[in-house]
Amino acid sequence: CSSDLIKVTKEIIIYPNPGNGIYKLNKIADIVEIYSLSGKKLYSKNNVIDINIENFESDIYLVKIYSESNWETIKIIKQ
Image (cartoon, rainbow, N blue to C red; front, side):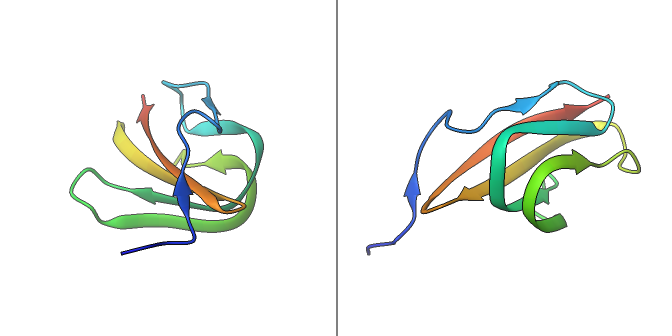
């Protein structure tokens, strides 16, 4: 099974992590999706440099980031 998307680790950084719900990326992402640890998609946005999840519960979330032909998943902690 081949894919046009290649997983690249540590190309994109989310900060601060842990944070209070306002996060920044070190570069613009084409698509950002945020999932609960149970796999439910909670957030999806295109052309992202800032993420605002202040209204989310304090928890750990998985952030899937697509940039050019790359993707990666990063855990974030919302305090």
